Image (cartoon, rainbow, N blue to C red):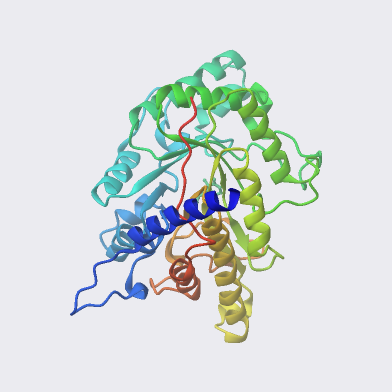
Length: 397
Ligand code: XIL
């Protein structure tokens, strides 16, 4: 009986995939999957392949390739900075929606979904807010009310236009912080206590009943010891489990996926196991900010291929591990890269000691790198019975 049920579920899934795969091939132009975009190949699995978008690059008239690839290769977009609080409300009470609106409109024109990023984070907050709290002119009570208003204002403006919101970002510390026992870190926890997390999800839900609401963090690609004192994914797991038990409307866990070729990193089965463990809480999952940086040694900068090749290969392998794990887990709804070209990547500006770079899937001249081809291969080769179409949760009330 159990087996028959499995077979019929499997048959439906196979039929669905067959329908998704039905691509009209004309006699003159046979279907060539390698000529398809990442977006088109992702849709065969119901998976959205996205990118973070740098609005300055998008608006640069001398850089048409950026706009063209952002529109054609991806089925989902995220504002790299334009929806952060400091961008939206640089002056207290005066919202500047121009860049964020532009991204949402770009997505609409190109039939892309939007990941909203980010409502509550300790970085890139407006100075009026942080200095007001520091000098005592903004009380804790007022701060909580400002947060409620901010979430309500932003989510309401884009109601119905955002597929997934990163409601809370990076709320949990790292083992290298002090104290090293994992804890709720940063501006919001310090000023409001960890209760701000449940509040934020409730306020976001009140403003948009249909968006999928995510908790987003880095270094949660694979579980470690299982002890929440030093295992960040375990801490996040326990946190989300607790929030769900309290009825908090949290729908997903976003794993950022910022990797580096100098680290040990993970294999596909470890990452798959982590996504499955999160998914067992009843939430969706997603890779939200994937990039794989490398140390830019002098030899790399001088063009030494013996140093460059292993980096390109390790980068491709790491992009691929996250993609294969995502494909293997039906609740993994999207795979977003944090910028698609080394021409516009946050890595060289951010990781300077030692210098790092080469983190994206296209090089500085918009040539696809091995990582791009490997992602494409993963999407092409994947199929039933191991890889089945996505299943999204109903937004939690
Ligand atoms: C980064 C942007 O890419 C940079 O342009 C900006 O200067 C700093 O923030 N985790 C996140 C993202 O959630 O918002 C960060 O984006 C990268 C790390």
